[in-house]
Image 1 (cartoon, rainbow, N blue to C red):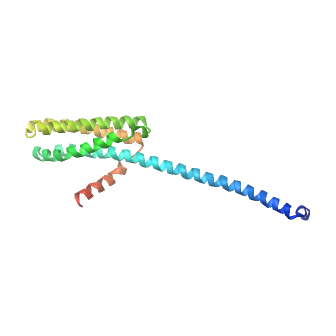
Image 2 (image 1 turned 45 degrees about the vertical axis):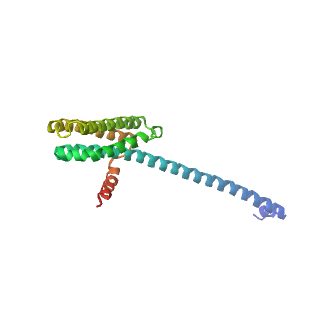
Image 3 (image 1 turned 90 degrees about the vertical axis):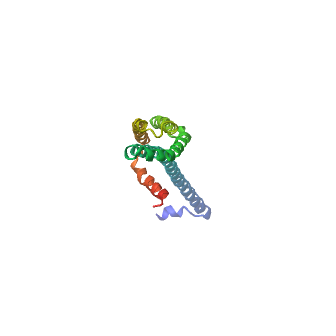
Length: 191
């Protein structure tokens, strides 16, 4: 061992060895830092993608809740109460249509989810059209109300199925949004 260290006779030899070891350590540190940065970037990218996916799913969930609310209203309200609800619901449904229309489809990623959003938007436009026709037409006619409520229930069932398909295609559970949506409703009611 003495022989090994005796080869470092001059300070320049020692400096060369310290420099070599330092260079190796710097290269190793650079590799570790770059890997940590790459992993951090991947995590951030995945988090942003998840947040986008959840945002898209929240729009679909809002449309689903509006359709379910209308379907329940047709079975639980008389025609006059339903008429009053329609006047308010048309604006909410238009909001969902606007939100569904502005989703950048190229960012969704899944072909099934894209088709789900396109079809869900089309059904919401059809639902709003039906509501507009009913409001403009035989609003006080009880028989027309019965026919209309069946039509709304059928369309709302289609919206429900499409939203469920969209959640599955996005690989997101609708249960994730239920409590958030309920909290928004409670806040808007003043609870």
